[in-house]
Length: 390
Ligand SMILES: [Zn+2]
Image (cartoon, rainbow, N blue to C red):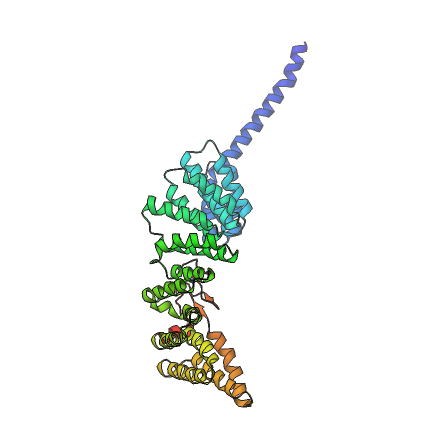
């Protein structure tokens, strides 16, 4: 009799469970049937620029079918583009850790994860991800190029040199100018720390690539000067002036100073005058004016000659400003000249900037590396107004 009681209780329970499971299965099947519809709905939202709604739709689709790896990637990239780096990282890391995915899919996830880390500013984690990628033959060169970008952003110049060298030997790419700049960056740091021994050692390495950029010779001259070897500094600068004459205006001042220090004042004045005549550059003119003005009456006459020559050869607001400033210095009591000098100085300062020829980034000082686009040697050694007249 006991058995029959159980029978009456057990059968309805089994029936209910079966009904429930059927319903669940049906609901899942309905969801799966709706997948393509939801997917295309998400895409159309995305195309209409309704990113928020598109993400909600895709999240729902991915929840129903976790095997839609492509959609996971679309979603991860959308998170990244919207600055939701934590969600992007979580999603891509989940994909990378899924043992059921193919090696290719996991590699793809790791590449995306590395990009997430870069965008989020986690450079150490990005570096670790790219190092893992560099161990895969198919991704090796891609990873090296990405690592190089990270090292430059992080100012890890020694690692940047090593990576660029690997790219030269393994990919046949030329990174000569970049490597030369990386050495110069290291030299600048050594000079800041007053470590002349290290700076001199690095100059030797940089000089192997001195044809790649004028910066090498200019930096070598600075190191020689810091070491008290003015003659060697002059020799470096003169070699740069020969190979890259357009860069003379940015170092003609210190070169003239070094020549003067060695007793060749007449040679220094001739150099400054020639630099102005040959380059017609505002930088050369300013370097010349600041030095010849110290030479007494003869210097004042020379300064007038230099400015007048500039105005005739290449009339510019900057040259006119220099002339007015000279007049003001001659007669500081003249109120009209004083007003004109003050007004012109303000406008001249606005034009007195350098511009990256690749991205248009403006800088008040001459730079070897553009902060806007990351290019090297992209600033012409001329100020904006100078360049327009060139
Ligand atoms: Zn730029």
